[in-house]
Image (cartoon, rainbow over all chains, first blue to last red; front, side):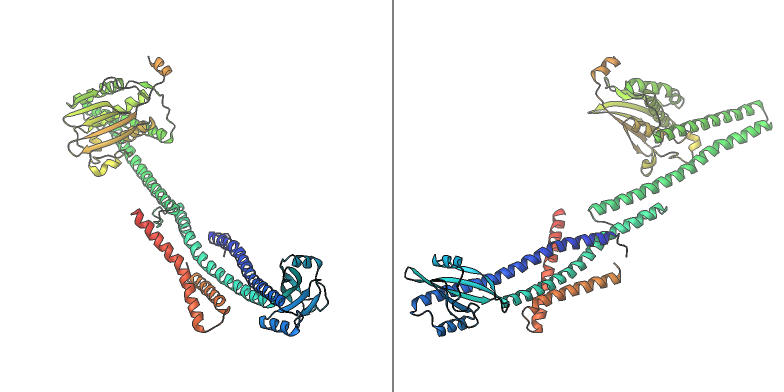
Length: 474
Length: 65
């Protein structure tokens, strides 16, 4: 088992914290028990010494050995009686202080003032520890001696020792329980991480169908969702790249086949008339233009996606741009008999965009609309909607099915795949439009009804000009 | 978790429970009945936080819904 595992680290940390709490808690409980026992015995012998001091005070003779022995036996303690000079005058059997011994002057002074003596002492011969309580004997108002009660604490020590052993045993039991629960808990936390690690390794190896099955709503669930999203994006990227290469090779091969075929026909003189030759040359010319356009579009798109395209941003009058685009596409519309309309709201705020790129966007969209519209109109509208300027390019063309609307801005994506040569175009126009709009801070949406028409809606935010720019544009 | 890991964890938990029961019973040794009573009560004391956590979890989930 590797030590550098999250289960070990987490489990170790929890156990460490548990011990940090358990050990001082055990110490505190031990102190509580010890203190409690000592206090109980001390209180007991305090009461005894006080009671015996009162009893002796009422007796005529404080030297009655029989009486002292009886009291000591009765209470299971040892009793010593001292006179007013602090000299031991009587004692029960087994007491450590022999008759004639003197207590300390300090104790005698305290007792003479009516104070109690409390403490702990060790028998030098037997090494047995005793708790001591001394109380003064008062005859009327005068101090006539004191009663000392000694109680052995050996029994207490044995009890405390037993309790301490039980505390240690229960501590070990708690530690075992903590270890068991911590291990399960740590595993439960670490398992999703291990699952995610395995999933990401699978994804790194190229198995992009791998998904993490963690559904919790916490940070781990969020991480799992991020990994799944990453895998989905990578899969989408890989699919689109493969599709792109397939499309580009197909789109380039078609005009190349035309060029190859017709140049061979012209070169080998396989035509019957000059008109036929001119028709073939025209096809070669058209296809070379188409090929050149496609290469230009691809180059532009690649630059945009890499962020290498340079935009010349300036304050632009939208109506001028729309008019310019309409002017350039009006001939095509006229050839197809389409009505090209424009409705630009007056006094629209200026847009901070690249004029040339903006014109390119509208030409692409209007050109696209004309290409897919056989009858009716193509309309360009622009108006202000609160803090945005909205521009729509609407047609009455063939429309786009709902399930294809999401893909309409993909490279080489065509709605009418079988008739792509009939409609023309490179299949890159809308991809370029979307990139150009987004590069200039705008957004583009599409709505369409199959057989009725399509509407592209571009939204640009209104940016306020400062004074210097106002003067400059004037 | 593997079967061996569950086995280790189970042994740990049983040993922990036995130690706690022993410490609770041996301070005042009596019958086996007292031992099993203590064992049962320790299990209940362990279950109390588990039940409390489950109730809290269910309460939070019902609040979220």
